[in-house]
Length: 340
Image 1 (tube, rainbow, N blue to C red):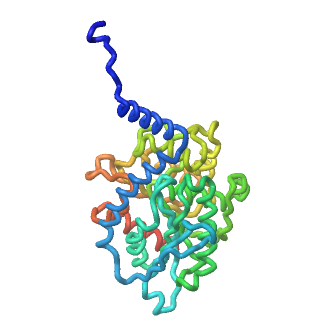
Image 2 (image 1 turned 180 degrees about the horizontal axis):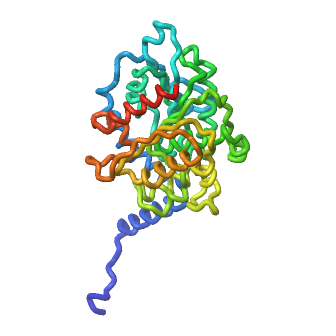
Image 3 (image 1 turned 120 degrees about the vertical axis):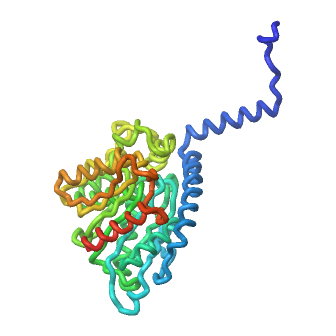
């Protein structure tokens, strides 16, 4: 036997390592859990860095109510409320921004953006950050029903927090933007909400507007194009929908989630933004803004030239150390004051 064709002996340790690797690959293919935990770890690392940078902007003139349970029996179903302290001394009620945080449906937390919510509250709003059970711990449409429960709780207990229950804006970033737009579509079309398995009972006249950052609204465009999390896109929707398929024919839930198809002319005014270095701008935010405008919905946008430097990636708005993040905050506040 020639040296080139001789088989090399495999040690038990090497064989064991190969078996572990094969088992790991099989686990990633068999369940969304391993991939979801990987995504969650990556998001947690990035979000910690953003939150640390936000800390220096945290105002001292805001009263916080943290980890308020809004749905009995659901440990993750908690919310934070941030209100300018002056609202309590003046006994005034404030328009309320209810924000669903993103995280690809599987990661993220309201706690990550608490400093940002406090900055926003300092501008004269009550801000509610909603925690919800991330997939695959609970699958679609659990997040929508938890948003419904959070809104019901906020309105029922508005007096405790100095909230105005008749003036509410829904806000969300990334997957949170998808969730709130689907909820609003269900408000406008109860039959659609019923088919999709979630309740949407917020009185329509209470909803004054939407603030949407870096969202996903069209799953035909979402798959098959290069974007920020690659492999993670399939795992995240698999975890959230319970179905690994990435086409609407094979995974009908993706059609229900594609709010570009379900948003009607009754949608409230919307503020939509996304960074120039975020592929979701061209794939999602701009087409969604155009679709709403074509239906007669008032839309305010903040987009940046393709050559803008520095490039503004996913969730750019939370970087308040940068000029673009500060501009996004100013324009969001201006929009909020206009609609409520």
